[in-house]
Image (tube, rainbow, N blue to C red; front, side, top):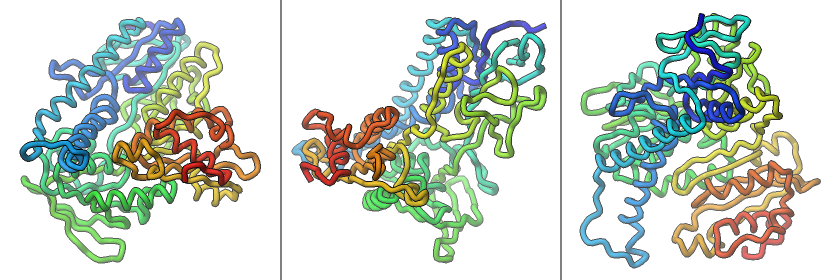
Amino acid sequence: MADKQFDVLVIGGGPGGYVAAIRAAQLGFKTACAESNPYADPKGEPRLGGTCLNVGCIPSKALLHTSHLFEEAEHSFEGQGIKVSGKVSIDVPTMIGRKDKVVDQLTQGIKGLFKKNKVTFLAGHGSFESAGPGGYVVKVGNESVEAKHVIIATGSKPRHLPGIPVDNKIVCDNVGALDFDSVPKKLGVIGAGVIGLEMGSVWRRLGSEVTVLEALPDFMPFADTDVAKEALKVFGKQGLDIKTGVKIGETKVGKKGVSLAYTDKDGKEATLECDRLVVSVGRVPNTDGLNAGAVGLNVNERGQIIVDGHCATNLPNVYAVGDVVRGPMLAHKAMEEAVMVAEIIAGQAGHCNLDLVPGVIYTSPEIAWVGKTEQQLKAEGVAYRAGKIPFMANGRALGSGDPTGFVKMLACAQTDRILGVHIIGANASELISEAVVAMEFGAASEDLARICHAHPTLSEVVHEAALAVDKRPLHF
């Protein structure tokens, strides 16, 4: 006999998990959320929010913001007539402390949301015990919980490389990269993905000499080619030394640094000596502790739970969302799937369009995209028209002193329906939402071209890109 019974049990308290629990409770279900977050707060209490709030999206953006302000003060203030007496310096412990306060405020806020929505928080690791006529029995800590419906949202963990042990002091993954106690003189980064570029940017701005080693032959192959080329050029000017086509060799880790042998894209052997090394080579689903075999839950060779288009598993009334299933490992994707599943359990028509999940890299300039890239359309044989407008032609961008980058819009040559939007520039993370809304409603580029955009704003570049699809831009 289980110790507690619920209508819905969510395993995992990250973005997918806590949102699923809140929405299920809003829909009238007796709901619980189990979380064994290893990122305990200073009081030793488990934290909700998962990787995203504790050691991912939120703390990294706090550090990116602080490092951006530091670089502005050091290099840009003078050009705008702002005088700073003395040398600008960074107090790393204070920066890290501010980051920790932001994390604490948000994670405590989720506990408040649980209380507001009457969600029961169960502190402990959740794993399946059995399935029966009343639902599923799940072990949470030292007690057994029975639930009619189970939503798995256990997230992901960093992928590590063999032969390069991570101690999160000298050799770090995304967790350790957020907690340096000082600015390393030389920083090595393995992997030129989102985490590698963001963390490399943080410490480069603060004074590190940063070298990024990427195994793939092309830089940012997931992005539109024009965006990737522009980003590589801009990051190079900023001081990020990005090497692609690299093969990692022997790595020696000492108390004061790392010696990493590698072969470059031309086959030349080289060695990278650095004070700290960040390993950012992707993430793997957190499914190994679920005891999936106890109930016959299907998990593939990559550790992903196999689901259909509505996140239903092979088991009745068991769903999985977020990083443990197919699709991009993004917090906002997990949240949308979470709402969809809760509403499906309630008999509603839940929906999540994986084709229109936006991607963002919070470097400077920011990079954001949604839909198809130009190379994808070419490979698929889709006839399209393109409009591309630089921020250099925009009054707001020039006035703010950051006119880097462009907006590129791709539309079907026959129907004019928008197929993809790609942005590199200031506030790209905010600008991309207009494209997502437009594409979700099946808009044509002409629709955006006919909409009045406030002046002066950066969003006018999106407007001009839509006009440029029809070769009639007004300001370029």
